[in-house]
Length: 300
Image 1 (cartoon, rainbow, N blue to C red):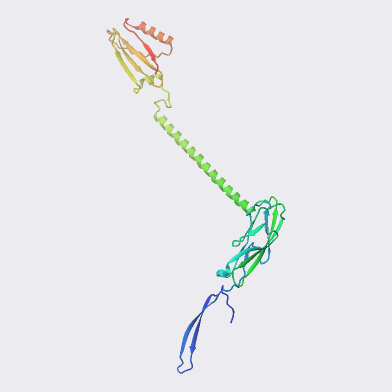
Image 2 (image 1 turned 30 degrees about the horizontal axis):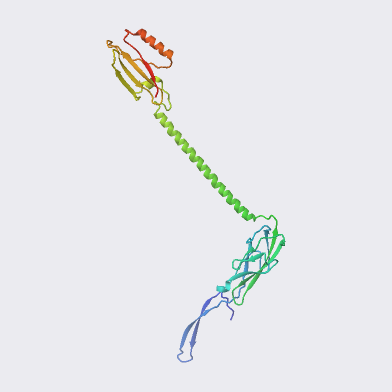
């Protein structure tokens, strides 16, 4: 009663009944399955360039500095048929210069065969034919007009995309720098706090507070050596001590064998005149001539 379209209806069923005229009437039923076969009844439709219809014109621009295999544009088409009837191929039907451009048979990419030279015309025209694989063959055409310009830059969309990528990389680099500075600052603060705590704990040492010489000699942790000398009539005790990293001093306490007292005198050899003055004062205060005082300076 009407024609069928495979893309809309692929299969349907018919219930058939056969009946005689006897009495009683007898009948039987049968189900008929009808399968629609696909015919190549649809031509390819161009979807890119979007402004291009059947036999219409598409304008493209490219720089004259383009090298071989430069991508000019890409033609895309679809076929509403199914199976091998929908297989599409592309080819250049006509061209202003057939040696300059080529189109990929399966992808529809239009590229340059060679580099553009000065002798090439600034305006090129390509007629691209799009065919399916059906029987009979259905086809469509699109005309691509190419304008070659000097100093033509990349498309604005690509420039914006690259600018966005560059800004993203710059933002990540700034973030890394901020994190690095923050880490260094925190590490420095922690180190300063640790040193401050150590200095507070060791305030009696030489880290933060400088003690007087008297406090140094009263420190029980200093390395002191006591040596008793009994040679001759004079007996004396020699006390050696001092900081290993600085000038050390030796002090001697000389006592008479008949004396009931023990005097211990510290003499700091700051200068020769001071030393002589101290000796003279001590000699004047001695009860007898058996007392002697000696002070020597030792370097380590």
